[in-house]
Length: 83
Image (cartoon, rainbow, N blue to C red; front, side, top):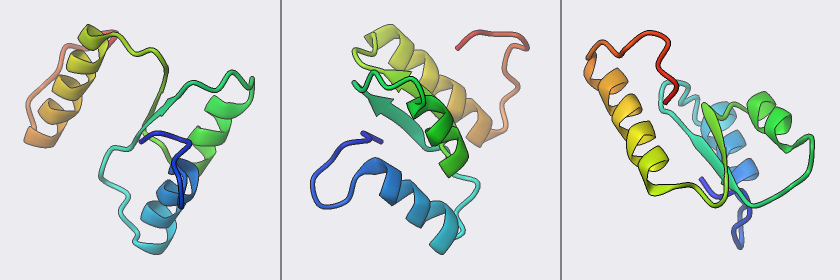
């Protein structure tokens, strides 16, 4: 979820998903180019599952998608893996 979008930004959309729709099980990943020191902790407080700064390397994106897909599918992941 990009944090800065027109109409409804990612922060507001995630609040809606978590609080109003009560969708707590779906992963929501924050993606931003912001450099504020407190943005990651703000995202964690809202209910984002993970946080990434732009630019996000393609390999990191692929690893992250694989990680959450494996969790969804109930496939054990490597403990201690830094995905």
